[in-house]
Image 1 (cartoon, rainbow, N blue to C red):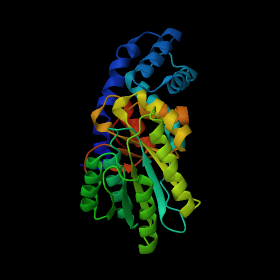
Image 2 (cartoon, one colour; image 1 turned 90 degrees about the vertical axis):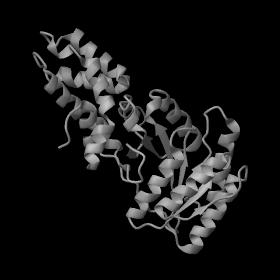
Image 3 (cartoon, one colour; image 1 turned 135 degrees about the horizontal axis):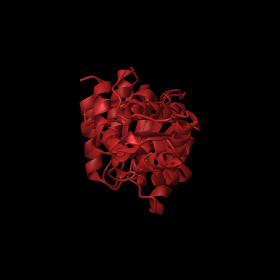
Length: 305
């Protein structure tokens, strides 16, 4: 199965939810204000968010249709979603010199963060970058073991300490090892942080200070992993982490198991942060660069081009 087929399959529940919410609207005799309002409400109910939903409503209104059939609505929906997503679809560039380029990966417990790091490492290795993984989530022994398993799976070394150890110390050792061995990218796992856990945010600040002493440019990226199944709660996470951790970009996971993939559109419209990649499965190659056109068509329920 191709990536586009997997992508469409991953967004099927989302597309079905959008279609269910729009059921009956296109059969009305006129595309009047009431119908436009109902379309906007249906899109909000599909987790696209009020800002994006209103933009799409206005785009439909501006085209001055007398009537709008289902295919026409899906086409406009795809076009307008793509306009929202295109500005945030940016490649993850490895630019840090001197090496390593340091990527700090953050997110709440259960977001798929450690698994995403393994997939990200695989993706980078496919591009011929040398990768070192750092097990900075020292709160859970399971997270350390999980990262080691991913390291073995993708052929990337992992630097780790003991459960309860100093995460900043692990990161320090990781930079030293990567520098000594000429490794291009250091990807750092961190403890799953809840927004109200001040001490965990302070630890994240400590990691950043350690990195800054070793390389003033580091971390070069701070990527927030979001679980699409959490819906609107994902937006609250972006709000908090953007202010407290200096988030530079997003990765959205678990899009294959949710009807709430519209939250991707809401995040793009509300925050404008780069979305570097999305995940639609559990395999190593199920994390791929974010393709706004393909995603827009998948959400609208249109086949890949």
